[in-house]
Length: 177
Image (cartoon, rainbow, N blue to C red; front, side, top):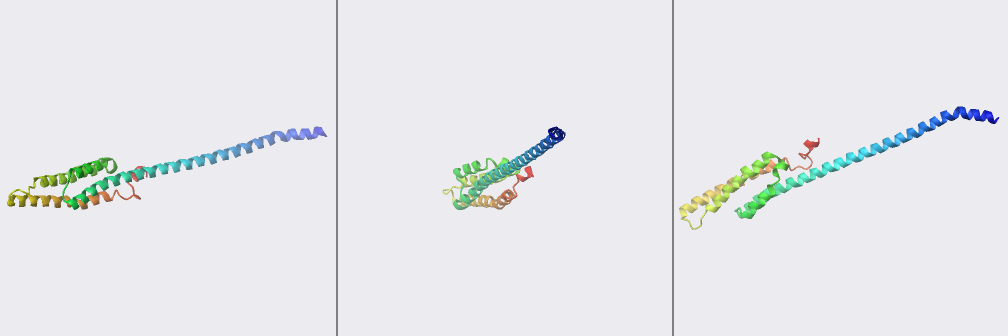
């Protein structure tokens, strides 16, 4: 009788061991696939976090440049003069403009807008309160015209910055889709 049971166990033992081995391999494969999915999700989340941090850093840098330009207009509008300190703050603020806005914006800030500032400073420095009245009137008129020209740049500045100052539609999206 024991021989029959032993013979029966031998006949089913090998297939039973194979089934147990297949089940263990199947479960192990599913566990590994689940781990891989979680790792992929973690990597995707990390990439999204890095992208959002880059977007925030780029936005903050653009905001810094914008604020330095607007501060120049605000101080100039209030005081009516461009002090050396104001010029220094302007240059310190726009130093990163090429990398956060592109070459066109850099050329505008360092070229067109800066030249209007220089023209005004030249008119401001040439104005002499002790000059004869006729000359003083001419110099005052020239200074006023340069002031108007510089202040007329403000709408163009706003327009040029506007497309870069929306955080939700960040230009960095062009890089990452």
